[in-house]
Each structure stands twice: as C-alpha cells, then as structure tokens.
Image (cartoon, helix red, strand yellow):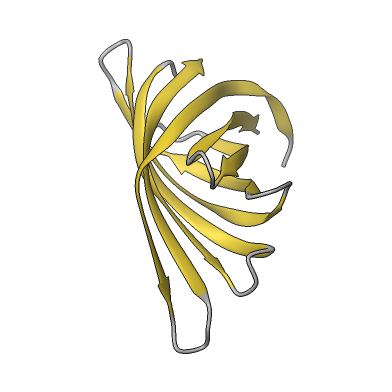
Length: 126
C-alpha cells in the first residue's frame, strides 16, 4: 500500500453531537457533520462520525459520509481509524476510507471539540 498525492481537503462543522457512556465506562460521541470538500472531489459533504474512548486521550472512530460533487455526482464512503489527543480539546483523527467510486483514501484531520469543527485532508492510496 502506497499513500500518494492529496485527493482533497475538507472543512466541516458538527451540526449535532450526542454523548453516551456504556456499562464499562467507555464514552461514545456521535457527531453529525456538514461542510465542503475541495480538490478532486469538490462539493458539499455530510456525514456521521462515531468516536469511542475510555480516557478522552485515545480511541477509535468510524465514519459514514456522502459528498455531493459539483459535477452532479454523489460519492459515498465508509471509514474508520484511531484518534489521539492533539492539543487542548483537539483530537487528531487518522484512518482510511473506501469510496463508492472504488477509490481508497487515507484521511487525517483535527476535530476541535470546543468549536465543533473537523478539518483535514484525504490522500490517495494505491
């Protein structure tokens, strides 16, 4: 697996966020986000990120999203990865996603919990 050039960048804001705690004390956050994508997949995007952590320092996440591209097409994707603390109230998310057009991308971004923003980039995987 080789990670190549940047396939796009995204800026988004959480439109809603819920938090729950399971019987083992793990914390789960469900964030609905919307924003824009630039680059090879330019357009509007929305999705849901579900993150789970025991200590608010590290954890894992899954993502389900759709991008409504400027050319009229729609690309959906499913992804997952890990996150770690990256500054005050910031989580660095690193993962991979498989897109409905057959592409695979690596994703990296920062989720700022205080401002409820999630911004980052996608890199081609070949």
